[in-house]
Length: 94
Image 1 (cartoon, helix red, strand yellow):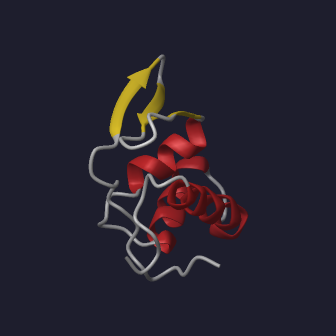
Image 2 (cartoon, rainbow, N blue to C red):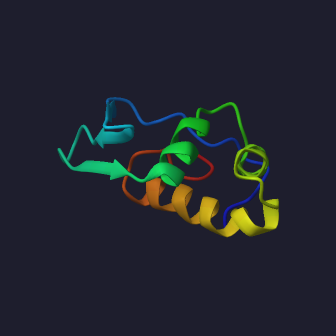
Image 3 (cartoon, one colour):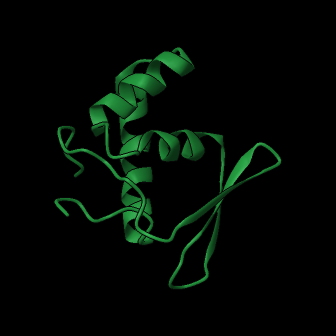
């Protein structure tokens, strides 16, 4: 499970980010895989800049969405985990 105190990001070197019709598309440098993020995943991506912890990302999203942190935490953690699994963010502890 993702720990709330560890800083998330920044993106691994070479990930190319571009906006497409108000969405974010990411190009992985090694695999040439393209990821098109929905609005929620895009918000998590933008906040995963190496300056914030998961808890801080969740708090920012809760304010933006008018929701409780508890309602957002699991989805935000899963999104960060997926970014790490896909090699877009450095692994936890790395």
